[in-house]
Length: 248
Image (cartoon, rainbow, N blue to C red):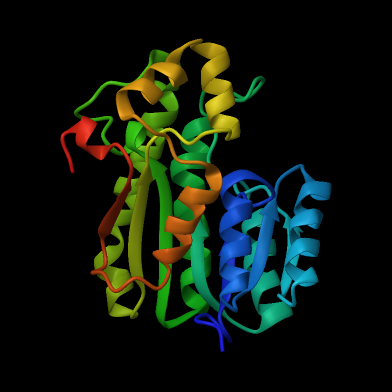
């Protein structure tokens, strides 16, 4: 029996990178997984096929989290396909992509996170868990500056975390717990690539400061592990390099 048998998870932004690895990890533990993508349908389909190939259950759902229609599609997919919703991993983020408006980072990294949570909560059973995925650069932005090109994203992600934390007392009344996972720069992710393009040398500098940077697979294992970790609601799990920011 898997640790997450008879549980259903939604993992936002899970067609590639950290989100895809989190989805695979949860499926290996027995959870049925709703794999979310915005544009990368083939990649999401590949994630689902990989899960199903080893006996897991998953479905890919194209949904733009900045719209209520997209959010409804995700929550409906969990219930319609698997009959429950027990785990919500808020992994999707952005704001450095070319061609997006100045307000897009805040719309996705704060507003969409809370809208997604508000839509999911009425469907979640007592004992359910929400995991919010962020970066040290965002989590510590109020005390430690980041590179100017990432500042807007960092501020918006911190705003999303703060808004989520304000809901913790209400969620606890429903028996739903919240965990925040904050990671250092993650090797090979799309946000890392975008950051390197806008600030050449920034990743190598951080690699030297930290000594080691996590891969997407390594970080995803930590994120997935916090779904069942015995910690208090509101706990922050730090993955690598937090001592640089004054927090060990």
